[in-house]
Amino acid sequence: MLRETSALPSGMLPRSEPRPGPRRFFRRIAAARPLSEVERMAVAAACAPPADLDPAVDLLVEGEPVRTGYILEEGWACRYRLLNDGRRQILTLLVPGDEAGASAGLVRTADHSVATLTPCRVYPVPAASLQAVQQQHPVLRRAFAWSARRDLAIMQEHVVDLGRRTARERFAHLVLELLCRLRLVGLADDDGFTLPLTQGVLADVLGLSIVHVNRTLRWLNDEGLVRYRPGRLEVVDIPGLTRVAEFDEDYLHHAPPGRPP
Amino acid sequence: MLRETSALPSGMLPRSEPRPGPRRFFRRIAAARPLSEVERMAVAAACAPPADLDPAVDLLVEGEPVRTGYILEEGWACRYRLLNDGRRQILTLLVPGDEAGASAGLVRTADHSVATLTPCRVYPVPAASLQAVQQQHPVLRRAFAWSARRDLAIMQEHVVDLGRRTARERFAHLVLELLCRLRLVGLADDDGFTLPLTQGVLADVLGLSIVHVNRTLRWLNDEGLVRYRPGRLEVVDIPGLTRVAEFDEDYLHHAPPGRPP
DNA sequence: CGTGCTTTTGACCGGTCTCAACGCATGTGG
DNA sequence: CCACATGCGTTGAGACCGGTCAAAAGCACG
Image (cartoon, rainbow over all chains, first blue to last red; front, side):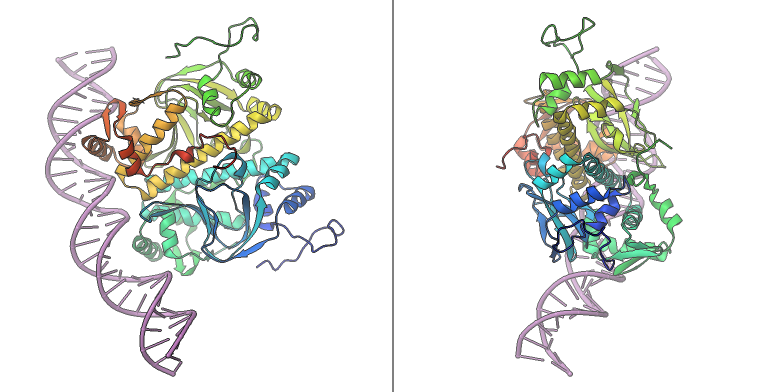
């Protein structure tokens, strides 16, 4: 991955090392509106140099002030909440191109934690830069607003999953959502995607026990809807999954807001 | 209700009928930052004249474009999603001061529906005015951004409720959340609040069946945590409820974002 | 006083959880 | 090279939380 080399116009950067910037983030944002070269440079300049992190590293901690946001370039992470007795609920999975802590300036303290789930490459973005860059580029302000709105939509769908869908339906829905989100940033091929998560993590996403995740996975396998192998998920029967999950990708708002259909 | 009469400074409005504007909305927003008279006037001017609606009226419909937002001045409403077989999940309850459809400009179509649950008084706000008023008043832009961020936080907590809390814990959490939110807009007294919702509606909020809502309510009653009577909920034992729900109101972000604590 | 909606209660069912054990891969140190 | 520990995946058995079905009681409204 990250094999593609820098394609920035020459002579636009100081003679220091070229900064590729958060490419997967740009790719995701382009779904709402493509960014100009100027805007991409502004974001890249706001970013600190990328950091490579181990799994299970906390980027944000619930209850603490948010001094810096993070743009995820590579690897998987999650937003989560912990209960006193150890129960964990994962609020959203974060995949490359997603960001955390972008609303730093609006809240006094973080209302959730964020942790890496796999080795990750992230671009830290100081909260101040985050605000400044939006101040100076209205298009970026809109981009971040769209991104926040999309997060809300994903969370809404998650509420429906946990409140009113069975384990089977939930799982099918998650698979299709991940497929769409990963496709957007070029990380899914036609027959599936890399899924570097343990079943324990999936359980905390889906609000189920590990054991039941395992069984559900087996059923979906046996029905021929997916083919699962630790580390990779192959999406065998998209129409079938779509029917089971009643999936409609519109909620992800990957189509730009133009004239209504 | 609405007994209080206009307290606007005299001579500031055209000689037509005085427009009180969405007072409960102003009151809620003031938690993040109080609005100046100018800003309140701008919002009031963006609003269409208030409309009085029956229960079970749809304000927004999933899949349709959002031409106008709504500020709720009186009554209860909800955002919800429907599944094909009739299952309904309520995403958030809306109480006076809350708004719906404020993100009109960011999405092509609505990803959820919004309906009144009781008789309501709402201020419709054309999507164009909504954007214009934020364009002209950066403070209002921040206010709406804060409001959206708060919605996200409420939804996050809802995910934790549905994914990892038992029926008892969920209910306790809902009670305390509503208490905080209603207090903010002056609609809760010390010993409880008006709860004009059927148990069927509560079931769709909590992701439970009607029958189980009823039983859970009975248990909380018998334990002396609340006293419920259709139409009103009295909060008897706040510390007890707080312990059961592990409730911490910080996530509502009712304290303005200043220097960290 | 019917009609319809909501609340309440009982009996039973079933999806999911918990507990427990085992297999398997990987890593580590002797 | 082997012994052992560790973490994850898998499977079975039984318990429990919450769902479903059914019916009656309370209540608003015509």
